[in-house]
Length: 366
Image 1 (spheres, rainbow, N blue to C red):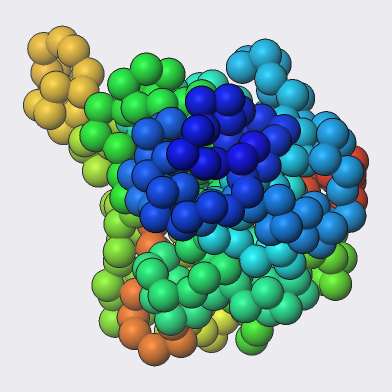
Image 2 (cartoon, rainbow, N blue to C red):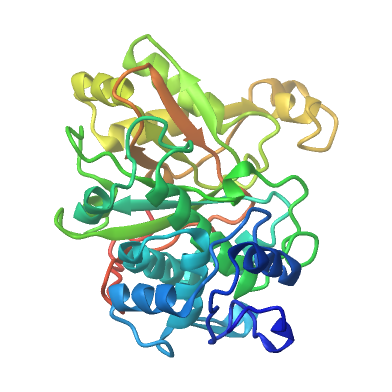
């Protein structure tokens, strides 16, 4: 697609033609006018840049990356490449973006439930395996913040694909009431160095030397500060997963915890395994029915029994996702409650990077 002063015949950025550079400022404004951006300037997708992106992924332009039945769309490689270029990705990021698109299309993820939700969840891309270090995807300092190109642009590419290929536009198909800053971009790597247990992709049945992508949709991110013992820390996690205003507390939908370095080492020293940690955290997600009624989360008159009857924000410990990321310094972790009432939507299978159909079914929804 050629962007010129006579650009009336140019096709959509989500289509198969490619931008040819004429004037960078003019191109950027053209992309804004066509609604191809996330509100920030995009990199004009020249034919050469898109060709390089496709080459790095070993893909033909017309190769179908994923079918999206809920949107009646087949996302092809050229569409992914164009949006990856516009997001600012380097060509070597393309295999990770492709894997993220496949994860987005997985039926288990429940694309439309996630992308159209009033809660406006953040879609977190979690990268595991050697490719994270190879591409420089941040797993440590300021892991959810700005400053690293790979994290910023891979996450942004997925959001632009949601805009341009799948037409999830705010106020139309995207019905988010508030949204979150994470809807611009959210991509992290798991910190697998000096890990207390096995990393996420190994837990899901892959080899440590495999590179994978997993998506998880979350309603918010709550930082937890705790300098005490491991049980005190885990009580704080349970509390954050069960705050009275949480949209997921009644549906008992699965949450996630991202363990910072000091907390990961504290739990290592405790000798507890993931199963013990999950069970303890979930056992501390309880609120009395009386508290939920006072907060208006459950209708009805408060009875004496309600003061002692407990409702738990999670009822299946195995559904609590535990990963490690963030700085080694600082008694901080991040709790990410789920975004809605579905127990399955918002958790993708783990996708093997660089392999068209490699998805392990074993333990795929942990």
